[in-house]
Image (cartoon, rainbow, N blue to C red):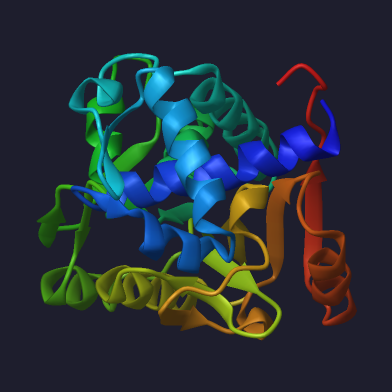
Length: 263
């Protein structure tokens, strides 16, 4: 796939992430968040609408409800494949007997699928994981309580935070909306940023961020933790090279997952 194609895929993945978190999005807001021209956003939304992923309206779009139950597009398939590669790499850092903390998000859900058969204890606020439980699961699962966010399908808030303060983990995998050398790990949701911060605190020295390339080099509104509090980033090979170089210069270990050309 050409560099332009990969850039387009990464940008449209971010558009889909924004649509997952809100009932609707407007073109000017997306253009500002993505730092691109409004005409580029309109073209992205038009193409996604043509694929049956979103419903367009004047000035914006909304995600079609059916996309949560069905395979929405090759774009989503490609993004899911990237996340699976990241999750496979993440699983190699898990040891038998670990207490593994998983934050909310689709990439951490992919990590769960890779480690559910292992002899570990999993602590999570990711409500999506509940739907993954089956008879083949070997891991012990502890789901944190809290306020349910229907857009992210995660549990956050005071109850979540209080419980986290009572649990000591051995490794955590954090999903995130954005990560940059300047701002560190950041989130579009304040409550989610706090959960990430607490999980990192309770798993000191084994903090792993799992995020596809579309999240790298970005800064969201709310700070979770600085780069210095992260030991490893696992992302895909399309991540911004200048960002990756800066992370490594700061002492962060980075694992880049290769992506097949036909994704």
